[in-house]
Image (cartoon, rainbow, N blue to C red; front, side, top):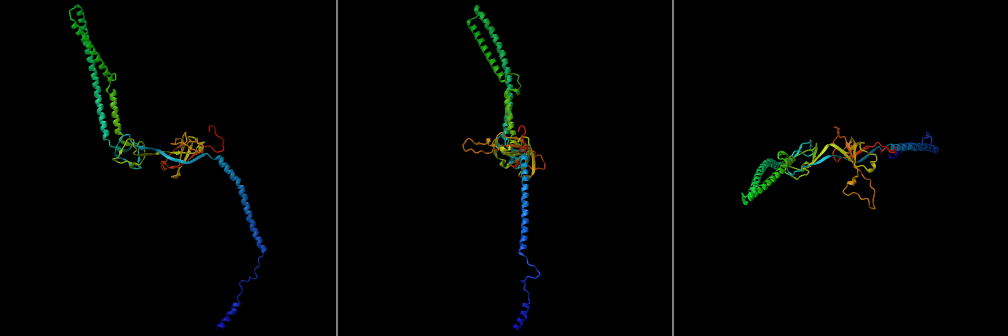
Length: 390
């Protein structure tokens, strides 16, 4: 059965066509035709490369012209990123020493001008004020007593003047009687001694009156409030009142307070010790430090565009307010000494202040210390003739 099966399969296998044979209907490709197609494609590729090359050569002069035009007509804007936002800021302190009684603000709170920030214990200052007021009242009484005493001295001088006149009369009479022998020499000597004594007393009273008048400032009718001693006592009262008033510390301008936790009730503050800081956020400016080579055509009053790193999509406008008369290194603690033999030239930076219009209601606040970029429109293009006066 196996042989019979094999015989039946063998004829079928022999009748299957050979798949490797090429059908007689398909023409055979010749080698010359392949080379022709390949050469055509290469030629087309070379033609495209040549056209691109010539296009680049034609575009290069145009690119150079555009670059030269940009360079010659550009350069009107001086830009520097060495710039920072600055605000008016002050360390809050008072010139009197005392213990903190209350703190009326919190950290980073917005305050208005004149708002109470903190208070010192006022008791010792109130005592000093009461003492000064009592001294002022006592001074007024003393001046009034001096005026009355001067009037009494004038009365004493008048009475003594009358006594001297009487003594002069007695002395003249005794002198005449002595020549006639009516009175003794002892009586005459007594009359002369009395006259001399009363004259000395009159002179002493006059000097005392002059001293008292000098104490009254040369004017016996001077007003008490115009006397120097009264003014001195009044100044002491005002100083005591000033110190008492300075125990209440108020904001000198509107802004934000910061570092408030540095003080607390019960802490002793020495005079002029900074309690915390107040920053004026409504009036900001830009402190820029451009290179000296960038300031050739920069002048005060030129328009400025400012961008801040914190707000890249917001632009502020302003003007150049002022330019420092000296480079920044001139104000350093140890200025550079360029007399040594190994000197290396370094481009210096000159401080410049830019006034910024921050009045926009929809613009974010400018905070001190923020980094900024300043663009100054100098109005002077590169390659153009210099304007008169530049």
